[in-house]
Length: 360
Image (cartoon, rainbow, N blue to C red; front, side, top):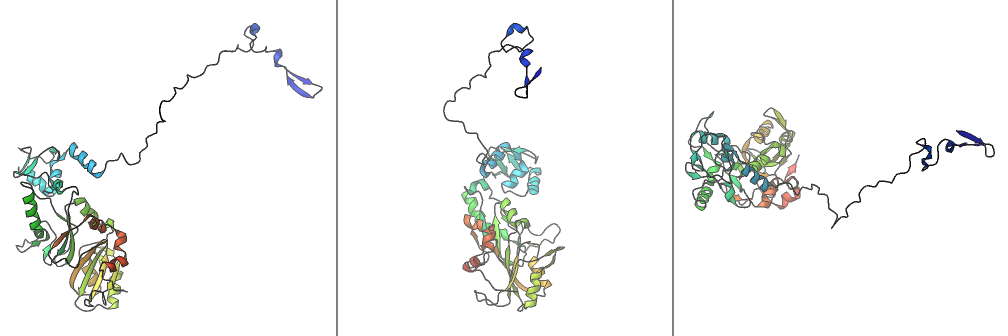
């Protein structure tokens, strides 16, 4: 099989001795198989036109808010949920209306809250009045946003004190200040109930100042929830001029509702640009817990005479807005509420009439 070449001192293979050359069929099967015609894949069809571009998801195919809302309306939803979205009442109160037989769908009384309806196809009415078109009739914006200068003695609630509290005839609600708006809306939209209004967060009955009111329930929850970390500014008017030690103690925070809270900023307003009294303190908080600013003041020994909210997020209450009056917010003003950068910009605060004082 192998032979050694003495002239070159190399080993060479002598395989031809045993295997005849390819193509020689005389071996009778002992050698290589005869050559066969090569096989090739069928030719690729020539492309006609430009090369196709592979489609990739870039967000353009995603449904926007309006398209998603229309799809949900077409798919149908629970009658109680539809009534709540149309602003008739809360979901629990809507169920009570349905059980009482006061709700009709396409002229037929429905007493089952799980009844599926489509707000784009079905006609829903309560006590004979069509409620479909409440929020839908507000135009392309879809919702309304108000800024109210809350007066003292008004409750931030949809109903007066009742279950679990003593009902009082003298209870006044902040939403009662919008009765003129409701009447104007009813005149413009015959036989339709006005949209439901929500207060964005709450102010206690003795606190005055800036209160946001809207028909947008989702925006209301986003602004009011502590996870949004939206700062609120309050002006505390004390019975006497607070000392530096008291202001410092307020800034250290205290326990409120079982949780230790620390304000973002505590400043004296002595020498403020508005020329007001020196017994005022500016407090910025994020948590927004019940009576948080009053508890912080009491813990530092500061007797609160008046408490007023002047800012939510990056939006400040205009000084010219009278007590008990409201104004409709423009789109850019609505955006200011969630603008953290504008909220913490001291230069913007000074240019917009913000009252900056000394910090301890």
